[in-house]
Amino acid sequence: MATQYKNLINGKMVDNGEWLDVVNPANEEVIGQVPACGKDDLDKAVAAAREAFKSWKKTSFEERQAACMAISGAIKENAEELYRLLTSEQGKPHDQAKGEIFGAAGLSAAQATFKLEDEIIEDSDTRLHRSRRVPVGVVGGIVPWNFPVMMAIQKIVPALMAGCTIVLKPSPFTPLTTLRIAELIADKVPAGTVNIITGEDSLGPLITSHPDIDKITFTGSTATGKKIMEGASADLKRITLELGGNDASIVLPDADPKKVAEQLFWSSFSNAGQICVAAKRIYIHEDIYDELAAALVEYAKTVKVGDGSHQGTGVGPIQNKKQFDRVCELIEDAKDNGYKFLVGGEVDPSGSGYYVPITIMDNPPEDARIVAEEQFGPVMPLMKFSSEDEVIQRANNSDYGLAGAVWTGNPDKGVEIAEQLETGTVWINEYLHLSPFAPFGGHKQSGFGAEYGLEGLKEFTYPQVISVKKDNVPA
Ligand code: NAD
Image (cartoon, rainbow, N blue to C red):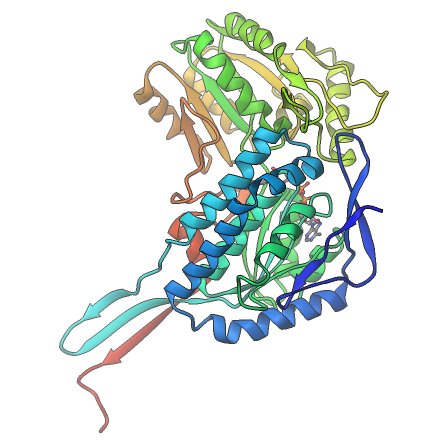
């Protein structure tokens, strides 16, 4: 029988006797079961969080920091077990899973240093006018399947640092590592402050509309983000939404194709392309297009697609069947329209596991589905451009606005272009670098609000202004 992983409610690992299967995308075998929660379980978790909030909101910065450092320590001390489990449920190769686990431990430690100081607006003979931040209350966190641990931590830790308590729902596709972490931290954080419950997608709207939850922090697709906003509107819950992206990378003619190819490759194919900020549209100047395309193909042929637990695998399977079908559909659409493939494009239907070969496409038109939509898979469309104005216009021609990149021999030129891109983050000559100290959030339909940095922490708080009239004491 597959291992059963329990939920964390009010400091205890519990189940309700109903179970959901969790599948390894590398071989489609059931590797674990988690509780299938509904309204009653959610009510219990929310009640625990509400009760715990009464005392947690009064804790000092040092107490909060100690709890978050304990979370960081528990993850770090158990890193090997956790990254192996993560690979088995998510599919990413071991080295990338290790990066996510250590990244989550590091993120907890970094976020545990965040302190929101009071702001003195006026301190005169007649008035003390002070602005402070107070926790919003009970937070509902909803997480996707591409970086399940990182996304859980980036919701749990700032919630605790702000003085909030949280009920977190992992994706039904990838709940195992998060529940193992729940078990590891159950006695390290006060009962009820962190609750982690699992269920199908249908548990999500119950969280969004729960009357005793004050804020939703969500990472996932733009389509679901819109439903969350709608659901949260009934009682005006605070919301933070980190949503989809269709990030453009722009390669200028002064970039050396040999130096850029490998980095550009991984900006698209890390985690099998299932990264919100992966490079999903690659615009290459016509002067270097052929040379860079050839270098990318040459590099792609050296990368092994396979089971992430096998040594030497660079690109693992797609995480789940639904996403696998969607990526296959985009490839079929490209074929139906006669677009050209430089490498890949042939999905082998025999065998188990959700494998899509590394696929690079040659200059499809702007309205091709593979260019216009977020593919979230190992398929990279290369497009030719001839002028800066043209490429900026094409890069901005999207409802998304998450991130982007410019590759150039002249970093000042890169900054000039970056400042014209309509996205929350732009990298110049690097990719996927996110600092816990800088706000991360999407423009346009890629998000609402921000995570990370003090700006992210503030989203778990309300401002409260206290104004004392010093020369009007009625006594
Ligand atoms: P998804 O929107 O399908 O699911 C995300 C989470 O929402 C899951 O836990 C799911 O169970 C839950 N959910 C589903 N329907 C819901 C509803 N009606 N109400 C409330 N919750 C609901 O997303 P996904 O397929 O798991 O993840 C892929 C998407 O996430 C991609 O679009 C990707 O770009 C985006 N993403 C964004 C970021 C970011 O930081 N901007 C990071 C990672 C992933």
